Image (cartoon, rainbow, N blue to C red; front, side, top):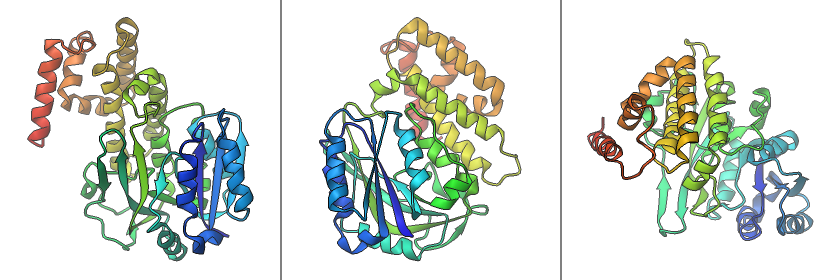
Length: 343
C-alpha cells in the first residue's frame, strides 16, 4: 500500500503543471510511498501531454486519468475511486508543495494513524507579491485529538481547509463521499460531508501547501463568484440539507453550524456587495433568503449580526446593487466598526 495518494485536478494548466509535479517529485526518497493521480478534466491545451510525460518518467508514482470535463469535484471523485494510499489529499495543479518539508511529511504520515492529519499552509498572492502563512492556533503539534471531544471554539474562525487536510482514504470511502460535478465551490463539501466519519485528528509541524492566489480565471475571483453564483447556491443548499439531518445531540454540529455561517455570509456578499444585473439578482437572493428562513430559521436569524444583511432584508434587497448608494456605505461603516470592536 502507498502511504499517500495525491489527486491533482488538471484543466488547462500547461503553464503551471510542471511546477506542481516537480515539487511533489523532488524528494526521491519517498517516491515509493507516493501515488500522484493526475486527473485531466478534458483540458484543451497541452496539460495531458505533460502529465503523460511524467507518467512515463515515473511509472511507479504518477498515474494519469484522462476524462471528459466534469469540474473540480469530478476529478476528486475519479481519484478517490482508484486511490491506493493509506491517506488522501488534493493538490490543485496551479499550486505546489514545500519541497523542503514534503518528504518528511510523507514519512510522518507513514507513522500516523489518525483519521485527519492537519498541516499549515502558505498563500502566495501573485499580484500583490504578498506571502501569508496560515497557522492553526491553540492546537498542539503531534497530539492525538478525539474529534467528539475537541474544543472547536479554540480554533476561532479557522476550520479544516482543503489546503490543510489529509484524510484517511478508507474513511472517505466509508462516508461515501461524492462531490457535486460540473460545479464550482465544492471545497466545503469536501471538508464537511465526510467529517462525521472522522474520529481523530493530529496537527503535524509542517507547512506543506503553497496556495497560488491571483489568477484572473480562478473560481475565488469576485467576477467568477458573480458569474457562477448559481453554483455557490447549489453547494449551500446541499450542505444545508446535510446539516438538517444531523441530530442536535451530535457534538460536532456546532462546528458545522459555524462553517455554514461563513459559507452563507459569502453567498450574501456575492449579491449584496458586487455589481449584479439588478432585476434578476434581486429575485434570486430574495428566493434564497426565503428558502433559508424556511429551512434553518436559526441560521437565518444569526446572519442578521451582519448589518448589511439585516438592512438588505428590510429593504427587500433593493439598495445594495449600487456601490455608491448611501445606505450601502452606512451599512459597510457599521460592519467595519463592529469588526474592529470584535463584536
